[in-house]
Image 1 (cartoon, rainbow, N blue to C red):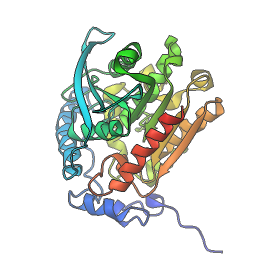
Image 2: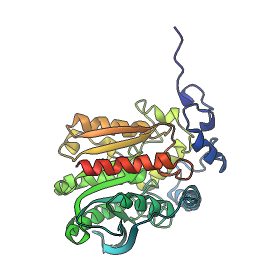
Image 3: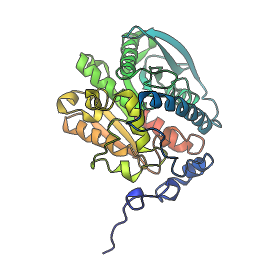
Length: 356
């Protein structure tokens, strides 16, 4: 009997994503144009670095990711039939929060609503970045009202505001949307986000349960959620942290970002509101339906699947979905290279929202 071949870096610790036979060749072609089809340079910071070094690094990293998001969606035409506006609200901490509201131009009646929390590891990037604007436009074009949250980050231009600042802003945005459902013409409210935004979408639901307003959320759709936190001390259960390390994301670097959100050694490193993978059944029971969507070639894949299984064990209606051939957030990054993959996830979110 032939010995099965292990996937990715479990078989070859030096494998690059371009050489992984599972990778979508269209994605690899787009990555190669920016030198991302091979392992990134070793992270200059780790979870053990000083907070000053971490914050300085995040300022530099944010500029690179800002540019990347724009490049990967640069050739896509503007989304037709959608309007957007900005609303500024006051958060629970007394800070101003910009909300970007997108909706169909010629709408009739009430529509389902999404509160969208963008990626960036809760540490960097902005909801106003062009790729996130395009994502919200495309969701709105399917017949939804989409509210993007400009939450405070733990680093970068909108930092430094460690946990729970960003979560408090997302909860404030969700509560404002719920309170203004009639004025917004919204029939239901669903949390949705990717990567760090996947964390915040999930954590907002956990906070809503703790604070007594979970019945106002109809569901959660989390993409490639960044929910473990302990990247400086990986656990055997999370095989993808080894299998897919250095495929677009570097695990050591993920630990460095996490250390700006919750300081290593603090109690918050295992607080489910900060890192939802640490939630237990009592935290999860009674939550609304969830979809946990992961990417096959993502180091963070397995932590999302662990959270999915915890939801099931707690009796929560939950569905998992794996986007094959894609790196972390590949289905909401590579619009120009893989428009059909992008569109499939947009359709899946709309289908989930409509099913609630």
